[in-house]
Each structure stands twice: as C-alpha cells, then as structure tokens.
Amino acid sequence: MKIENSVVLITGANRGIGLAFARELLARGARKVYAAARNPATVTLAGVQALQLDVTNDWQVAAAAHQAADVSLVINNAGIAQPGGFLEQDSEAVAHRILRPTSLAC
Image (cartoon, rainbow, N blue to C red; front, side, top):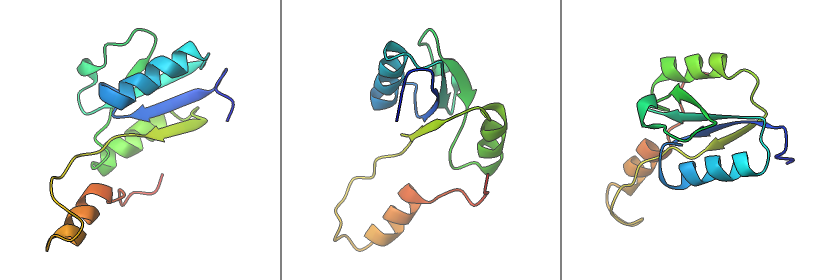
C-alpha cells in the first residue's frame, strides 16, 4: 500500500498505537488522516481530522463511513483489553465481545 497521498481512517487513534499510526502516516505523506475515537475531543494531534466513533455503535459506524467516504486505507486499531487466558471458562464469550463486528454493513 502506498502511503503517500492516501486517505486513512484509524480507529482508536487518540492514544497508544493508534496515535503512533497517525503520526507516522502524516510523516510519510498521507493526504488526509481521520482519527476516530469515542470522544473526538481526545484527538489532539495536529493535521488529523477527528471523528466520533465507537466501533460497537452501529449508528456511529454508519456516520463515520459517510463522513469519511474518501478513505482508501483503514487501520482498525480500536479495541479493549480483557484479562484472562484462552482456556478460561468464559474465553469464547470474551473473544466474541472483543472481536464482535458491528452488525451494520457499510
């Protein structure tokens, strides 16, 4: 994937790895970077366009897809951490909750 002149949407871009992705994409010449977070006010990196997006909220997913219709690259970084192990009794339910795709097709 060519980064220069690309239009990128990064979920969970307000901190951690998502913020690092946004910084690096800007440094490598991305034309536009959408930084999606549950609270767009937490997106403080200059040069990115903040979007409100909770990836578990179907309506916000649809709104973000509409707002960022020019995207050519998506980095789906949003997520949650769940302590425990793969062999725990509730591991299947936990994995489903963490990885559950939104039910709305965009």
